[in-house]
Length: 135
Figure (cartoon, rainbow, N blue to C red):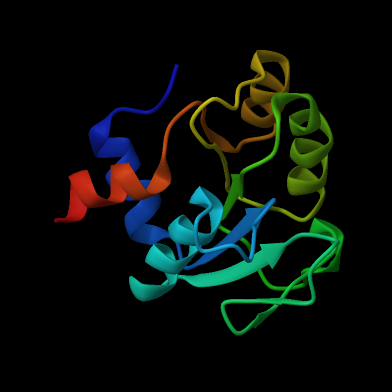
């Protein structure tokens, strides 16, 4: 079960650093637009895609393990079968929250993340929630 609106507002309001896993450099893709929106709203974005060098004027990382800054939210734009590995890495780097975008779900990985102390949002759009809660 996803956090309620009050909890989501607290998660988004306290976050500063957001990893966008599976980001695209194509402006027609949701991951690009969500990352652009988040950057515009003063979040520090860490793009992760092993096939890209730069996105939104930011260095693109090939893996979560390359990021040394404290990460608040790991926003996942990968298919659900990739979620368990991403969750494991998010736990390793000390992330505070896993956010699985629309259509991305994995109950087992979510439970592992929760047991490790992370907040978990599944099958929801961070941009849509931010607009709803902060506009």
